[in-house]
Image 1 (tube, rainbow, N blue to C red):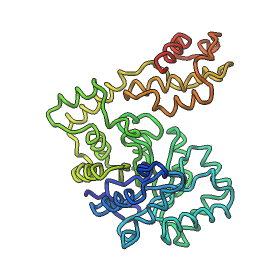
Image 2: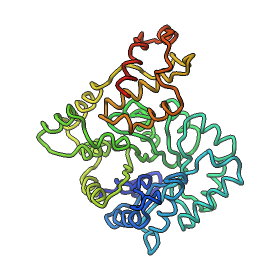
Image 3: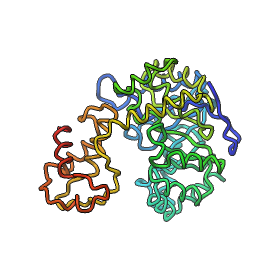
Image 4: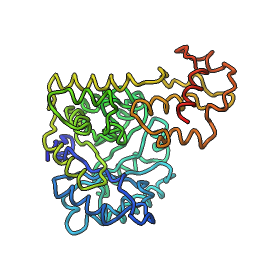
Amino acid sequence: MKYRKMEKLGISASAFGLGCMRFNGAASGDSIIDEQKAISLIRQAIDGGVNYLDTAYVYLDKTSETVVGKALKDGYREKVTVATKMPLGYVKDRASMEALLDEELRKLQTDHIDFYLMHGLNKKEWESFKAIGAPEFFDDMKREGKIRFKCFSFHGSYEDFEYILNDFDWDMVQIQYNFMDIENQAGKKGLELAGKKGIPVVIMEGLLGGRLSKAPQNVQALYDAFPVKRSAVEWAFRWICNHPEVSVVLSGCNEAEQIEENLRIFDTAEAGVMDADELQLMENVRRAYLDRTKIGCTGCKYCMPCPNEVNIAGIFSAWNNISLYDLNPADDWGLKRIKGNGNGADKCISCGACEAKCPQNLPIIEKLQCAWSELG
């Protein structure tokens, strides 16, 4: 296992961090998680050299922390650093923050949390955390030894990321990053900004929730034609590890074979590991994915709100994602939400209000009907 120095914190972290959000349910179907299997997977990863575990209060219907705590008995706690998170929706003041942290400590069966993250920030969420005194609380808990490092995970624009990163003395940040997200959310600019400030970066969604683990035909053809043969998973992880600003790459595993594969991949994936030809391959792969784009919608939402409550931007986003990553429409959570909320294109009456406001001059009405037909 390769380890990367978090210079600011004076510790070394395994390049492969085990994400504890995606464990399978029990075989009987009566539990969201198979505890014994999850414990076995966690310990297998630690025995293989993983020393960074990532969980959160809300993961797996609030059961993830409990299972991690059980897995870290019998001396395993001393071998790892643990990251967990405070969700804004469960706290409203100092007392509720203290109560939640104490509950997490009990579930994890530990007296301290190494990396404590404000969960899923954008600028609005950060301002809400500030309003209830979360920054001061994190400072106090660090002084008391209940947490070691003050951190946040992020889902927002680059502008939000820059603002938050410069607004508090952070010890670590967790961002979504992969070869398809170089201009999305914090993106490459955010990664490099954190690196310049000396703030360690942990990467989530390196495989985009598994979307990059199985390449569509035009992408697989590029991988197959390259002289060096690697799986889509290995190419994606090596691309991330190539960045010197990255400290840890999170990966959720459901099977022992996945743990073994990741241990092998991250044993050779170092900063600067990719040569010019390999980097060009990944750029060609990215373009091949983008060639599958159905519509050039930028998601600006100038077309909304629709007078008939059609989620125009959401439908186009789902249409593009399903095409890009060769997904089954029935499995796309964004499309499920649109249908469940009754915001589908079947409500469109072709009034044209959206097309009059679209800065891309897209034929929205025509494309909405085409998208809705393809998406079922």
